[in-house]
Image (spheres, rainbow, N blue to C red):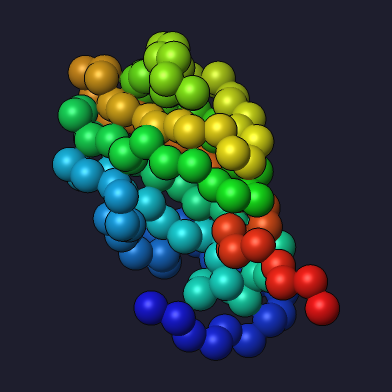
Length: 129
C-alpha cells in the first residue's frame, strides 16, 4: 500500500494510528507506523511502536542499507543477532547495522512492547547516476 501523504509538521496521538501485522511478522506481532512515508510523508525516518503477544515474532531477516534501533518499553523476549540469541527486556536497546541478520521473539509471559527506529525508510540501494 503506497500513498502520497502531504509533508508537514504533525502532532498525533498514538491511538489515532491503526495496528497492522506487517509482512514477515507472525502470531500477533503488531505495529503502528507512527512516523513513516505512508502516515506523515517522512523521507528519512521510520518510527514505529510494536507489541508482540506471547509466541509472536518477526522472522530472521537482513537489511541491505538500513540501520535499526530497537528500544524495549515493556516485557521480555529473545533478540537473535547473527544466529546468537539473547534475552531482552524493559529499557534494553539494540542497534542493528545493515547486513546483520536479526529476528525478535516474544518468549515472555505477557506482551513485548518496543519502539523501532529505522533509517533510511527504504532498504533499496540507490542507483548511481
